Image (tube, rainbow, N blue to C red):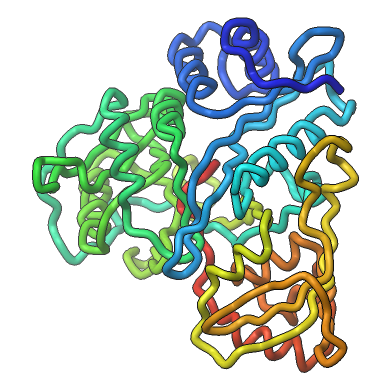
Length: 412
């Protein structure tokens, strides 16, 4: 496999063709083309060639992931696309592994991506995140304890203000940011009939909270609320009041349930609405899926930033990492496999080595990342993932790692 950095002068046409082939952008759609141009300009790209032609493209960019109160450096894998002529050649796996290694060598502590299905990226050490809940609701049935002011229109030309508001939004454990403005600008351009509604309540009139919609049918919906940004929960409620105000004409809005919120609390007779709308265009429902994955790229640095309110737990960690078998021999970063002495508590740490006095936890990097983030407790992961250890140790890990659900709050 021949890999090299993306060249904007020679590769844009080939990447455009790849994205059209995989259905990510439409042929003849100028907005989609322009959105892709901003995307490839803002992200770091790698290309894999076949006979001198670019046939696989992987994009990554810097960001952050919040662990309790600390922000850790995150490398976002924003795109993995392979042309029709290059399938089943190992290009996507090899190129993604190279991109992860490059980011890790530059200091990224964690890598994350969105998956097309479970299993493929596990081979690169990723572990599946928590369930994301997507609610399809009738806005006329929302019960919001306040009345919204008339919002201002937010247009895609406001991408700088939109992106800034996302970066400064209210965040919780597991929430992510992406530095590249294309994460907002391009996504807004790719949204069908995209529009936003929000409020400029900053000290100098800055956009503070808004919701971004798309729709194929603007008359009656459904509308897709792709993301929200707000700095406090009162602003969230005001945005929900804006959504409710659309209920005279719009019959369905799809939106992701935010961290700390149970949307069902805000819906009048949710089960009745589900039953009477079943199998219709405007069916109210709640669906969930875990489609984000993460992996540690530096175990000692991740644990150094881990501060837990519990008595400490010490153990040997025997960690495996499948990425080493995929990486080229010249890669300076080879994954995180090895033996560590780990302490989890108010001051956590991981040091290479082992101690005869401590119990042993064996895990893949994906499973250990899930444990560390709080996706599932150690006992559950021992049953369903690549993690094992003495029952007493698993119970102790469940006690010390009592964490909020790690909601990324930003799809990529």
